[in-house]
Image 1 (cartoon, rainbow, N blue to C red):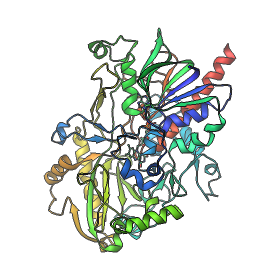
Image 2 (cartoon, protein in one colour):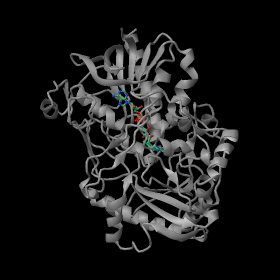
Image 3 (spheres, rainbow, N blue to C red):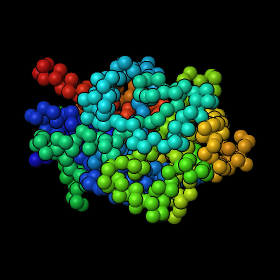
Image 4 (tube, rainbow, N blue to C red):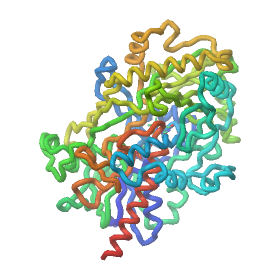
Length: 540
Ligand SMILES: Cc1cc2nc3c(=O)[nH]c(=O)nc-3n(C[C@H](O)[C@H](O)[C@H](O)COP(=O)(O)OP(=O)(O)OC[C@H]3O[C@@H](n4cnc5c(N)ncnc54)[C@H](O)[C@@H]3O)c2cc1C
């Protein structure tokens, strides 16, 4: 059967939420299409497997940016999940919703229904917090969000040290106020990663004959009758196949691939499409523009043995940690990528926290291998990034060939304000590292090293070593201006029966990690699709 009511392109953070919600009515036929393979792998389930998946060509698109002029023409590596669960199957599992003002700002940009008070119920609907009796409304969701399984003394020391620099201790970053320091929660259930596929789709897949899932199906383009989306064309086992959608096509291919698929299908800047011989269905110059990402700079320090858990994951001890994990699903292999975080302002003129420092009592290296290897000496690591960067990049179509990835132009540090904020953030991190009780663990700063002190030295270090924090967003932005791609109901402007529902619709990237807000977008998008369908049925 190649005819469905809804076709969802991309089984990632948002796509899996939609697959669950849209197929709840058993008379609705839903197809979920994913380019990658099934996610049946121990290293996807084990949180520490993130290091193995980071450069896995099997589960990861392994994108690279164009050379970045502001970063000495380096190409920056951009991992993206390519399996059931999408990037939520390979990510660091940190769960941070963002600041209430992020969403109020989205609303004020011309997107009614997207303020904090509007979106909070959608965040809550997804989440289950084991043992959380106080927040009754967060104990019945499908996605488990848990506290770290091991409270390492260095993580606690980081929190205390940051408090001594003037930050407030927060027990939860997810209630709309973020400024402060605390331990991070993660999408981990009993020591096992919770991708959105695990949380939303796996439990029902055998019981929903009306939900079809096609893996290994690389969508090449969307099909149109006039300006109405009618289906998709996908390559499966080397064959081109067509699938038809009676109601809607929902694009959930993520901030790098959703704009690409729109352009391949004739939706984008008409002049750019013409250059590649693609007939225009809708001239939308904003497709691929407004790319925002978090640019991260690392500081690492050698510590005393008690200051790090590297020694438990390096050498022969890693086998003991592996055995412990297999037996109990606990220990250091059950931790997310970062254990604690601090959010603060880069300067007094900033309205609310624009800097994030994420902290981990461990370090890894990629010395010539494709996998992260835990260092065999005790050390800690922290990354600093500006969560609301001013710099904007873009995704540019390079070819009409769907198998050729577009050009990714991130423009990191293009805006001078981003450089100034990063300098303030890195200095604040140094201050935290020098504060007790963390200072007692720290023996020596390894990276960049204490000789880096002046602005010029820090900028040099950022340019040479800065990396992405894996949070691209905004490339099909929601709004009502000339550069908007979708409206506030996530419908693609100028065409019919087509929506984008993923991280690309964020008009401004959220002040934190992007998985939780993308899942919220999936929940809210599903509600809007179902409500519009009900209204259309009543009107018919
Ligand atoms: C290494 C890494 C670490 C991260 N760590 C964190 C973290 O700790 N916390 C956090 O909050 N966020 C983190 N993120 C970011 C977060 O995971 C993403 O913002 C979020 O998953 C984006 O969801 P999405 O639905 O927009 O896209 P994705 O989850 O990327 O889903 C897109 C899906 O579409 C599929 N697809 C794309 N093109 C096609 C096509 N042509 N045909 C068929 N299928 C297609 C992809 O294979 C993929 O499965 C991390 C991301 C990465 C890569």
